[in-house]
Length: 249
Image 1: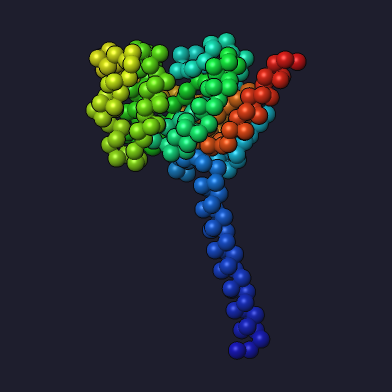
Image 2: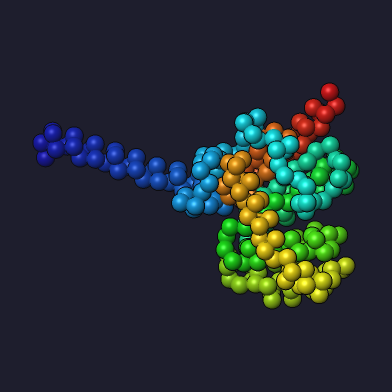
């Protein structure tokens, strides 16, 4: 092999190695932030780089005051000094991680002490099971709001494989029939009567998320900070404490 051939061979090897490394980086970065993304073709036109950021703060319209709160399911004091908007999908495993590993501590340290209100915003995009669960969740909030959080806990405790029919309407009704205080017949009647209204509410929540650059789940806004993915507890504590300290000034 002459010197020119050797040079070409080495150059080709370097390019190939670079492509392999780049592919590995792209793959790992998609998993690293813990977010389920909308497929590229279906993404809203705004904020297409949102899923690549762990957090975004003090940008354009990202402000909890710009989030629709009225009429949305929530837990906490209505007049709590801090509000967190939380976009979720019932089938999202990263939402399950947040619900089981982070949310209980936020409830204990901030919700139960009157410092935080958590507003639940639907982003049901992972298929028919997600949408069915979202509709039933809306009916539960309307008919038996005190049972709403128990319903959420039951759903994430029982989360199955994506679109495996675990969240079909019949399966969900069996799953939640023993939740204390939940009137299942009332839920069914309300759902039959108002399904189109609830579907519009689900669609509005998802569209609103896109306006803030949220293109997957979970996504959050606290104050003027956006948090993307199932981040550690410390990330949420810092954001909440920042708003609390600003309110004290």
